[in-house]
Amino acid sequence: MNHVKTFLLMTLLTVLLVVLGGAIAGEQGLIMAFGFALVLNLFSYWFSDSIAIRMTRSREVSREEQPELYDMVERLSQNAGLPTPRVYVTPSPQPNAFATGRNPRHAAVAVTEGIMRILDRSELEGVIAHELAHIKNRDTLISTIATVMAGALAFVARMGQYRMIFGGMRGSRNNAGGAAVLIQLLAIIFAPLAAMLIRMAISRSREFIADAGGARIAGNPGGLASALLKMEQHAQGRPMRINEAASHMFIINPLSGQGMARMFSTHPPIQDRVRRLRQIEDGRRR
Image (cartoon, rainbow, N blue to C red; front, top):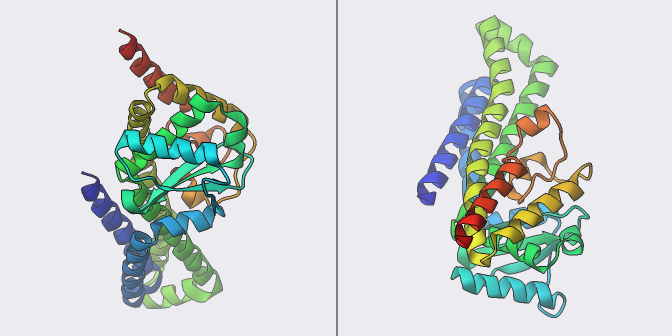
């Protein structure tokens, strides 16, 4: 099923990028955007782990450097029936974590410096189990493709804005009238928005699935529920310095926001996730 999701995601975002390129620069822009999209899709597939690691400035650690963390990842990986992924630490005081890689054999788990300071053992186990569930479900490839393509759409849209400001609108009027200008404006505005909505739909559904899978791997839904609440509390007003296009990779939204920002978050509300985990916990007790 996740192979189908990956193909559909790549197709949808490719179409958006091609449409945007065509709206900005006509047939030539359409062809260039199509080639650009193909290269990006191939690059993000083969180098998905490296992309996420470099974007977050994470550093790989060995068992000697972080013995407790490494042993925890290794043991939970065995519970999940997965090869042990590479282990990284992200230099950020905000408590957060993410997983990346195109498949379980080429996967990595990263936790921030902040998360290791504020969570107890059972809570950290819940977080790592959640990320291992993403790896098991092959969500990590989908996540990185969405990151790369969303970033590309934002870049092309910005180039379109510059083109219109520095002469593109005048050229469009001479060639095809005001309708061409309107099409350009709509494409520049709505293509990145559509990409964001696609990322939201994929990310929100997979977080619930990974929460349930993480609860099974760790064997303790309460640990993850407690971790989510604690992480949200400590993350308030402490946004991470990352590209917005990569925000959906993390276990909680790394960008602080209120009101409309929360409405358009790529993550479901923490309270909804905690409620579902409590229901799983209650079901185990019966």
